[in-house]
Length: 169
Image (cartoon, helix red, strand yellow):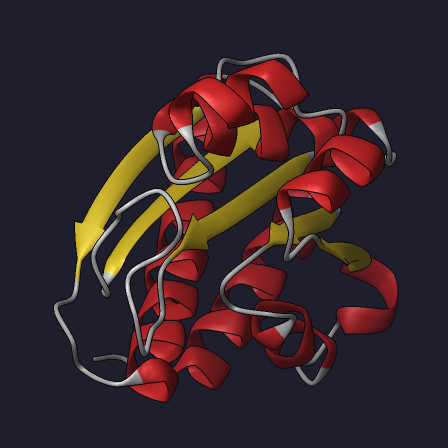
């Protein structure tokens, strides 16, 4: 696994080059991605902050995630991730967001999702969110969270590179 701190520095350097700011929405990582980004060079200019929405209710209140979709589908799926990423963008002036939800353990969640199942989304303003899933297995809470943050930071950096190649973000 790549070092999340190095990945955060790379992301914020890329954000500076693209002149775009970053916002995040987190559930199972409980603010870890925000902490890693806040510690990176350039954070004060290019990291707008984050939403820690650990419960379904908070996902609805803070990010506008549909309560009925959460009830019907649970919190760990592409529809929820997309809504979290888009909700973070809608509630900020940032140009790119990432959202993470899943089960870090030690037990499966109330919807039956296994430990290690993580769903993520990256949204660039004006483009559809890109969702993806990872299954880290029962690697332990800290390892799962760190791997999820690393993967989300890499996905954001790739999304900025792709968006910049096509048009200004």
